[in-house]
Image (tube, rainbow, N blue to C red; front, side, top):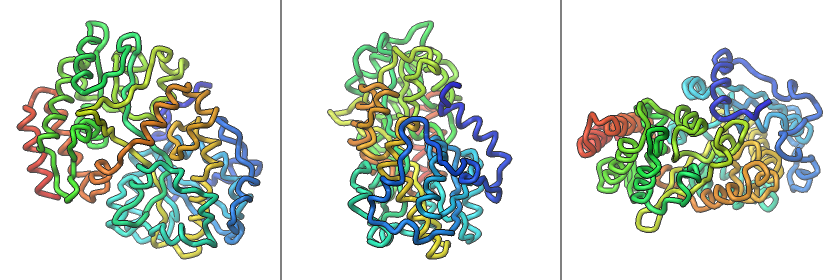
Amino acid sequence: MQPISRRSFMTKSALAGSALALGGVLDACGSSGAGGGGSGSGSAPKNSAFAKANIEWKRFAGTTITFAASANPWVTAIQPELPSFTQLTGIKINVQTLGENEFVTKLPLTLTSGSGSPQVFMVNQPGQAVAAHWVAPLDPFQSNSKLTDSSWYDYRDVFKGARDFATSGGTQWFMPISAEVQVLYARKDLVPNAPKTISDLIAQAHKANSSSIAGIGMRASADPSETPWPYGGFVFTEGGYFIDPSGHPALDSAAAVRALTAYSELLRSSGPKGVTSWGWLQAEQAFEQGQIAMWSDSTSFASTLLDPSTARDAKKTVIYPMPTVHGAAKPNVWYWTLGINKKASTKDQQAAWLFLQWATSKPLYAATAAQTGTAIRGSSWASPSVSSKLGAAAATAIHDALAAADSRPMSLAWNNPKWSQIASYVAQGVSATVAGSSSVKSAASTMQSKASAIA
């Protein structure tokens, strides 16, 4: 059986998830079997690794908590380990999984109703979750020596960008579970040297472009869940923001205009036909099938693109860092996180914290890092299983990019309560510019005026 790529994983999960409302529960512990199993990518952690922690794991034995999740490789990787958690703690975890689109629609309705369940949930819109008082602050759990062994857990091992993203207003609201950073995938036979600057990227895309292969492909659809993410890396690298540190839109700043000029020039002069309908799915397919020479997107695709069983040119694929402007790059990042339901009982919140601590611990990531390719812990990337899966060079490139990542520009935007609306304006503007139906100046001005009206 072939490894499940992010594309096929999400597609199949969305179809399966459509039949599962958040009220329908998948009993992961019971369905996985009492023996636990493993992730298949590394050795399943033994409970002796958790016994080393100065934590009374059994203090909430007999409790059942519900975990609401979006279809995600991290969720798939952790589910076979859940029986071990129940064995360790006596806490039963019921997992409710939906396809991503359905999840982000239904979960807010459940939380808005004031229900104390699910006690733990994946967070898609952090700013909204904090503003709506859906999540409990995690600092009291982190500082509670009866619930947390800080030395054993070693939160500092989590990439700084992820820790910063989980924190707002000096309070930690979320627990990061996966880390992604923007890189440049390239065919090394067509692009043998990493583009050093954005100008160099444009030149190399033009050079690689031919009648049989496009020089570069990227997301350019008007979908707010698609194009703003890779485009963001260009804006941030130019020194700009979507939402500036004062909380105001900055979509027509000089930096944003330079970014939009570069992004649209790349795709108009060296991109494939029909690219304005592309999201990550179409871009990934095109790269896998050898239709584009370069693609700037998330490291979460690396395990698929470097696997000869899923990508035609896997052995010709190399990962380059985001090109720079004035010697610096600020690629976009993304961190899926978990939150604890503020309306849950104190007991359930504390049991949920034990689950978060276990699920994001060093032993769990050692077991699952190679399977997901999105580990949030720096130590996980030194695992031999990761190097074996991705190759030493790719593992090092991804680790270094994640370790250097600055999540603040992205956090200012994605953590803004109005971001979902502003993202629509960004996607529409970028897509129109790439299509040639709007000038860069006009698109930037329109984006800014619309965003300013609601921010």
